[in-house]
Length: 338
Image (cartoon, rainbow, N blue to C red):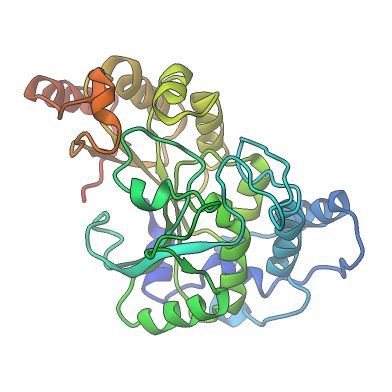
């Protein structure tokens, strides 16, 4: 059954991956260079089968695999390449494409509007994003530029405090869901949160998947479900509508790299983009991602700057929806509903 491991963690039957990572001892890594840290990290990951751990195997050690991931993330933060913009700025003192230095979030709450298997989902909405989607529905938090005054909706992010909130809401929540905006620029803050978090809970990475291979490797061993957003079936549409280069090449690569993980792929169907995007994505899923379940979303409405782009300035029509439903059957997608 797909998402079987996630369901086991959600029901507190088996330990979450970040819990396991805190029980995996690594050698002392003080004063080592970044390439040496990666060598220890990758060697350790190769030896660990996260599916074979039970609660009886859990005993926190120090230093552990999560500690190592945090140290690597600290180094990347000072020469940032969390996402494929690869700005290489020191975010302690500079801002890259995403304009984010320290982490801020907009809100956190129990979300009942996610996929049925996830709800109630404890969602944490980060401010800022590494995309500039012209149709963004969360533009008021994703497009905040922090070189101006912080808007009232953005709150300084304290990993220890957020960990405490997650533990308290675990009484009701099935998972913790890191979203935005986009969580990728906040990877260091999220890993620090997991260090303080001791309650067993599945971690959901809710992302546009424009992250680097380095970031993806840091997520392996801490994320239980990748909730991905597959927007465009080619690079050209990605650059025109989200202002990022090589969209399909990068996001496609990253999906292949997580094909053995538990994955839910979201695809928001855009008007006039059935042939160039929707079908191309469905073909890709059929060819490479048999383990994924797919949420085909028809609720597009023109938001933010979408009215300035004639091809996406309206909602879907009946013929477009009908064609997409045909394509779902054609490519034999394993569809999940909201």
